[in-house]
Length: 99
Image 1 (tube, rainbow, N blue to C red):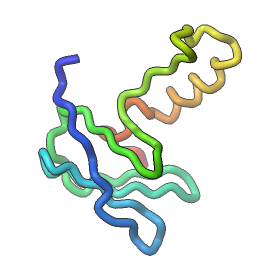
Image 2: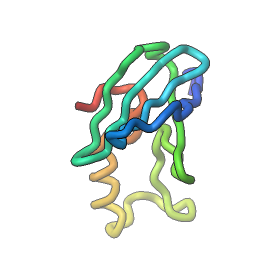
Image 3: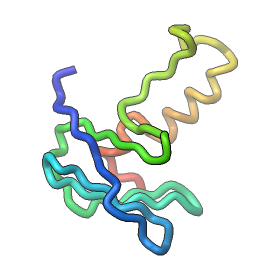
């Protein structure tokens, strides 16, 4: 992977519950709201070519790869989860404009 990797940092949590994230490397700023459904608003674009990741409460977000102990996602039990992850666009969560 030749893209630059940037780590987003949680700046603050607003009274609404939305989290404001920023990238210290390129200035990208986003507002993530989780309820009633996931919504992301880009406040400052920053470097759109960089892969951004971040985490909160032990959960890390970034480029997504689904595997169980090195097993393929061909496993029928994982198919619904893989479809959901693809639908949610987790792989590009920090770079896309989810509304």
